[in-house]
Length: 254
Image (cartoon, rainbow, N blue to C red):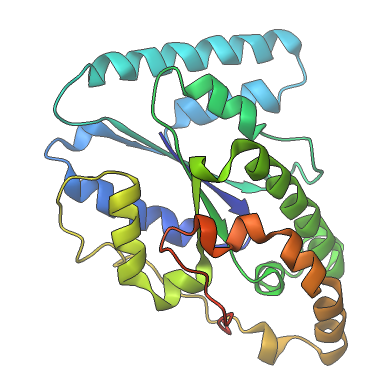
């Protein structure tokens, strides 16, 4: 079970096809990969987003049935069955921290049936904010929402433990693509496959906050996302848990 998370604006839509291409190229039987499987997403939504306690309990039963069925298909065969799922925080219309998917419970529910490979995406927070600068009432409101969720993910990842996940930055995807491919192949324990075209569907954003952001907003953002705040999020972007074994020191301008 490969689960990709991160705050909005970190490149989920660009990174997921890279993982799909790599996993797909490693499998002789394409039916052994379920990418963003709607049935599992629906079960997750029932567990964490539905207000009815009965539906929440039913969602857990539903998830267990789905995972049991997949585990039976895998059943000790030579090839592993891969489920790929991604989610950004906040999740859709759920903008507040604590009203969304519970990562620790998610892992506890899935682990009895599958090996969980958790990948946390990150990006310079001003660039991530600028990518959806009109959300949450505007740039400053969106920055606060993303900062709150960075705090939440930091708490989650610290509790989960650095040995149980990997991180990768949007900046690394744009400048260190080959290292990202090698890191994914090793982390996901993929058999040899065609890695040449893994990034064929990846398109780097042309938005540049350093050039396009109004001077007063740029000054505000740099003060808001200050060094102390960034250091508090080290677990999400530091070298210790990096998929490529290093931290991109100079944030890219994309």
